[in-house]
Amino acid sequence: MKIFKNIPPWLRNKYSLTLLVFVVWLVFFDHNDLLVQMERTSELKQLEKGKDYYTEQIQEMKKELSELDNDPASLEKAARERYMMKKDNEDVFIIEEK
Image (cartoon, rainbow, N blue to C red):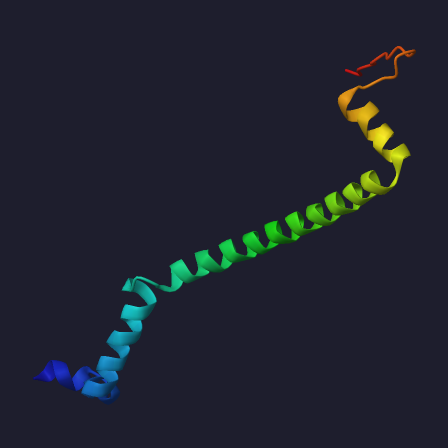
């Protein structure tokens, strides 16, 4: 058994060998291995950025809704700009830039 003499003593120990195999299994072969965890972490960061963006958009929309509810001038401005509404005695000209 010359082969076993070349192996370091800590690898000949059945407990350390079992621990080594367990760690290798967890890092490379398990369902939740290291690569999957890294992918999930990056996906989580992207989702948090998206959450921040949509939270900001919601705040802007709430502010705009509040202005439309409380200020008739801003309501008229929004109706004219978005929906191209006009008064009976007006003509509306739309100029589009290329």
